[in-house]
Image (cartoon, rainbow, N blue to C red):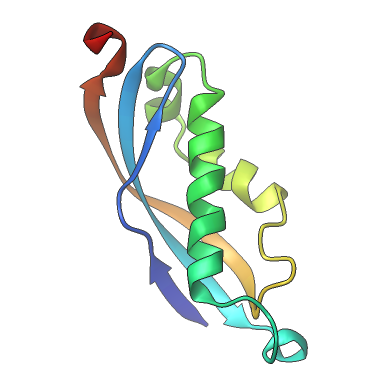
Length: 106
């Protein structure tokens, strides 16, 4: 297994608060798809998309902060590792920081 860490992914909850989420993804090589399968960058991009979608569908940033494992569960359930050279074993939310109040900037 290999651990890949994402950069801070910026996502905005429905209440307008930006969250900066970092995740640690544990993967293992899928030998059947090693040649021709999408690589590490694709896995990270898909994880980032899953984080943005999950946080964006949350009514409040507080909901995300209270249950960060909810992000992991939703992202794992989406099967984001299909067609890649890796199989995602686990996703752990390493850090969540509160960013800007996007709603107040409008």
